[in-house]
Image 1 (spheres, each protein chain N blue to C red):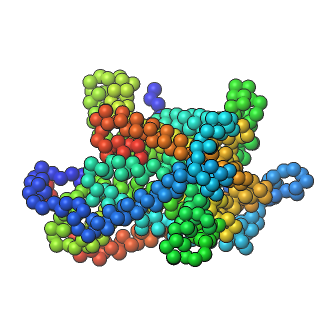
Image 2 (image 1 turned 45 degrees about the vertical axis):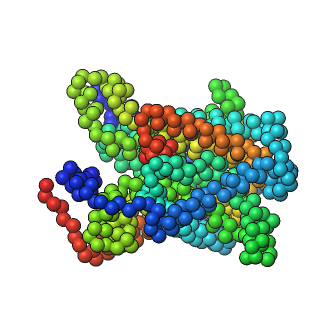
Image 3 (image 1 turned 90 degrees about the vertical axis):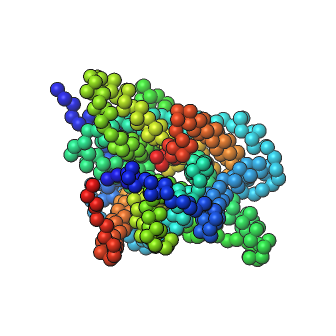
Length: 297
Length: 305
């Protein structure tokens, strides 16, 4: 008798089913329920199902929070890419191999300080009487104390900081795998640096760019810690809104619907960007002047 | 498809006389400045936390003179000791679960492909894209609903049900991560070595122990380290599923955030960072002894290999 091919994966399968699929399935189900009258002592009722929670989640201040979160996430991912790409390029291509290991290790060190504590570090830095404010006033850039804490700006800065290493690592891996000979060949054939970057390096680093973008965008959109520490009332994000429905308002039905909308928002955005990416690639390939052909061995 | 340069092409690259030395032209200078700035950005809040751990004042955010006061009081604080112990127990437990389940799944994916792979990978993808906050609320509701070993008063587990909740809660995401790392490693390795073992009449288990396991070890180690650190860092799931008396360190910090932040939090973070750095240096040393280059070591530790 031969064991089926997926035998070794069964334990993981059980874990995912029991502690992920079924619980998340319940959230999906609850999102159609409603919050029972408070005297019943229950937190969720599902005897009448409706879409009304979705209507509530997508109106008024809740809708504003969804829009704000989407903006923060897209802008944050983009800034991470802008900061991370030149950095990863430098690390993978320009730094001598002797130092590369150590420098790569340093990128991950922030991860060994707790996420929450790092974010609190920014709270100290950005405080009105804190170091950044002091320096800015000392050199005369500002006269008044810094007033960025508890704003959207602070949250934006915080998420870029918190997720930047997740962008750098896959970019580094992609650029590190790239044969230097390919770039040199491009230069030997007379391409300028910028052209080599645009036509050789960036296209070949695409898997890393895609991986980094996903690795940053997905957790960033669901983040609730950064907004809770740095955002105050003005810098709210969906993650925090969902948490509040469960921890404060005790409206499980509405919270579940918000969670579902959040997943939908992430999947839609990722899908949309994938489509744009595929379309862009098709256009680039059509406009490429030189077509390379396989040379028969 | 292979990107390796064939023997016939090699003389061309060798013959190239002038390799630009790094640091000589303006792009290199700009990139180096950029690199330093990024490191500055990454380390700024960590240095500030370290500096403020020597704050003598009662509130973390208000500097009130230099002193070791909060380091001295740490050993006498049972709540903090308990929180850190819980964190370590949760991290070890969930790393073990994730490493075993993830490695097994990774082997199956790389070596036993079939139609099931599509379904399983879809599930892994779903686990990875679901925001942690959704996992957290779903798990909380689920644990409360099924009770049994995840609620109070269950015979075997006893008072450890809080820990059990954390182990499984943290293991979900990291199992998916370990699965991918191990699968990637094995998929990149030629199966012919294992086939050679089979041709030489090695029993399946011997083959696994003597060929597959050593080959996948770097990936398993990287996965275990990653799972451990993901668990230590986990705040969202922990906040929702942990129970009073068995709440890990981040939950303690998070609740302190709502009342008052004391410099003790910075002191503990500084100590934990130093301990992790020492532990990591040891792992790096072991890996280097076993023949990896510095770069390979760094890649293993960062999970970037």
